[in-house]
Image (cartoon, rainbow, N blue to C red; front, side, top):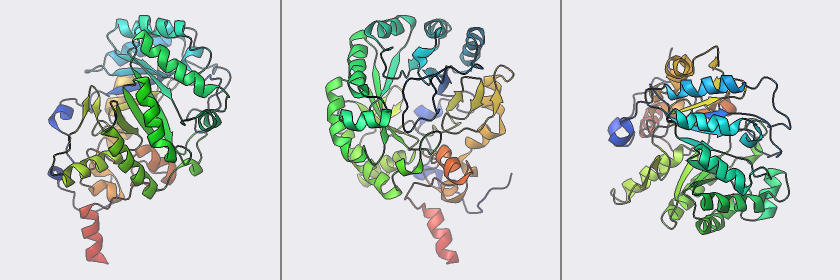
Length: 384
């Protein structure tokens, strides 16, 4: 396949190569995380819902037997990934606890992303822990009920989310909080961080909007305000006990490395079990990530709806390793525009999902990044 650029590749030694501790995991053979959307049923009507969740389950959802087979296939990767049960609302699935127990039984680490509804009782959280859930992720899209509940479409969601965080901590389940970075949450970052500090969370993940599903383009920030947000997150990461990363904001990794270079390498990369402050270097849609929809459709991520297979007719290991789409998504040198020559492309790579949503080309340059790579700047300077 011809590349959409003909510029020299950036020097891998100047910030583009993942460190040794990342390279030891072979993303060509095994993903870091597999998301299994067990159902699209959900009682919330979130403004930015990727899944366009619905009130009732899809009649074509994988059966219990098929779901168990899927879990077995996921466990057969050379390096078994973290399995995240997501939705919709996973707790709307009647056999959820059986699926979790099976996953734990075949050696998979598991996590879950429940919707803040009355289904997530303290007893349900204890049962999740007993079944084998190792981490829970909840969404908090505002520092107050007015902001958060407007996004979630249900009154009382803000209070319920905080109660779930407290119950999960009481049950011994580490909590990750996801916040969507929108014009509404942009001015609240510091206040949200202070609130989360009181809850004793493990990780705060800021999600940069992909205009897919219910999410509309007006929820996005522009590239300059994303850069301003990165500066504030960098500062907050030094003031709070929890890790901070971005989701579909791969260019925050570039920002982190730039700040370290400015300090002569003195700024530490704070490590966690799954990455560093900024996000795991190199992980991207289809590279370290895989998504299986409730009816078996296999995508590079939940935000990149390019169908690469259909379980059970397709084997998920084979799709991840050999699908032409997955393979090219793992080749940052093949990306178009400035991303393909960026000195940070092997650690950042830009959001492939956002590139697809905005341009129709998953290999195009990240639309919401201000950075101009040296090779790109030099090439255009000589032709202008």
